[in-house]
Structures are given as structure tokens and as C-alpha cells.
Amino acid sequence: MKTIALVVASLCIAGTALAQNPPAPAPAAPAAPAAAPPAAPVSGADSGAACQTTIAPKNLHGAALTSSIKKCCNDAAKADKLHGAAKTSFVKKCVSSAKPAPAPKT
Image (cartoon, rainbow, N blue to C red; front, side, top):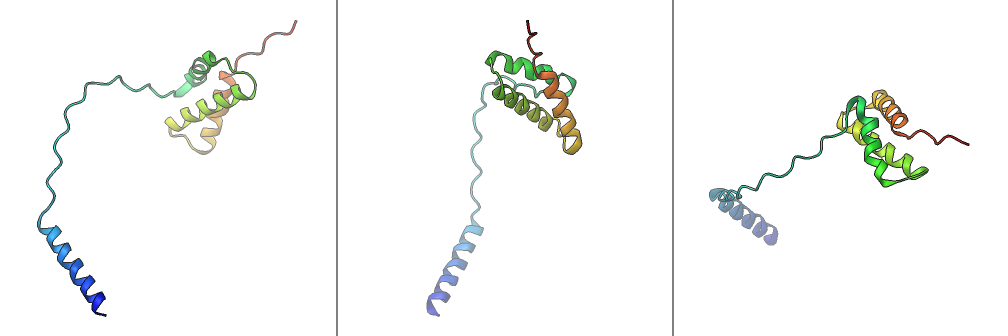
């Protein structure tokens, strides 16, 4: 019982001591040089074309290509803050427009 009373009393004293002396504000950080603006998120009607130009240099095929396109389109839908049916429709349209046309068979 004495131990509990001692712990409570010490916490009360420590709490009042901290309340009396607020911490000093942090010094202002030096101004950083202007950085390049972040890349604009892909949005709207041009998302399929933008995803295609983003993924084309990677030279992907098959499942890797499909997965990358879906990820790009999902990121664009997230940037546009789409949810539910609107997101599903947007991603489906984006994926279909971003996939390259199949090579003609000879």
C-alpha cells in the first residue's frame, strides 16, 4: 500500500513539474531549396494512354503487363478518389485502353 501511495505521489509531483515548464518551441528549420514538383497523378480520360506510356518502356508481356496496367489504373482511380462502381468502371476502361493492340497474325 505504501508503494502505491509513493508511486502516485511521485507521478503527481512529476506531472505538476512538467505542467509548469512548457517545452521551448523547436527552432525553425532552414529553408530547403525548391524541389522539382511531384509528378501529376494520372487522371481522367487520358489515364489509359498515360499508363500505356508509363509501362511501354518496361517491355513487359503477359501477366506482368496486365498486372502493371491494373496497378497503374488503380492508382489513377485512387488519385481521382473513386470508389465502388465508378472505380470499377474507370479501371476497366483504363485497362482496355492501355493494353496494346495484339500483333496481327500472318
